Length: 494
Image 1 (cartoon, one colour):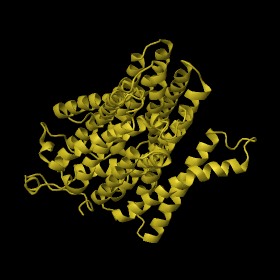
Image 2: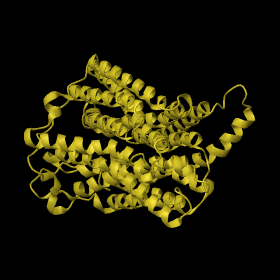
Image 3: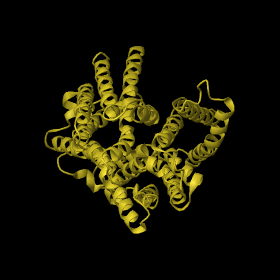
């Protein structure tokens, strides 16, 4: 018992380190977009190819994996979770290393190739690491472990804009701005691979053999869930992709890119806060007062980390900075955002631990925030868009769990189809970028004049998620009686 517990802890430590780097490098795309847009003089549609190349790799890699699974069985079951993770790390390291030769040239496409290879590696990690976190501990706390792992992923997306933005916009210049940071990240991925080689990973449970054909698609909760994953990833990525440019609009905050990039950590940090709170909410703590108290303390601690890292990045703790200046900046920026953190906690309470109910309430909150961001100006619009990250936090895990609920022997096949839907992160930002360019031509006040209104694209994505949380997740009775063993996950139905 104790040996297994010790082995599980070591495995989880390695996995949490992996999730951190995974998030750190994914959010670097939000730094690359404005950098490459400026370097190669791109419009919004052209700059969105960054996300298209990266998340398009998720789709192609998942289709290839799913095809192999249908024809000859699950590849992970043949090579093992450990080898699957090592393969993903190796391909990811290659993709990061390709930024070095890309920076030596004077073309846009080598960067897209590097991002595509990086995305292929992350696809394998997505398929291997997520289920592995769930199966190496108690089944009843699987959701808690997944939220905790995703919390570390969000820690990476929180610190990524601060560290990556400093390296790309301040420390390095020209081609050096991406050449050395990505080469360093390739080395870290290889070191992580060494960590996994020498870490004893507990053997995972045997999963069911994937059925031939597309039997899982008979279930409406999965069909609607695939679309929900598509629009969720697409909406989340689109907002992050254009956040720097949005903050830079004269009618919003008028900030330069090197200053606006700091607030990417607030957007992605919101996911970290929500996911860590979700890990506590779905854990084994039964006492409500203790659970809510820990959630509040966790939110405060995560918020403090975000602002402390931001302050260091801006040099607010340097010897020449007076304490009064720090207090003025923090009171101007921190207090309004903390009000949204408090609102996020209240929404968790209203959700009462019910995935569908919580998903619907969170989606409604995002829709309201996007309407405010589209129709208002200045600080109100600024904080409304930043706060969306808080309410994105549990959407992935809730949609995923609701989608595979009741699939029985088709669960693995359904999971593969859901991973394919990550391609929304490639297509939705392109759609928003294209709309921003069209609207700019209509308004005629410059290339950025259509950006604010283009946020209607992710707003429509969250309208669909609201539908899924209210209606789309419910299995139809004829599907329940279709002869497939009904294996619902306890507590999912309201």
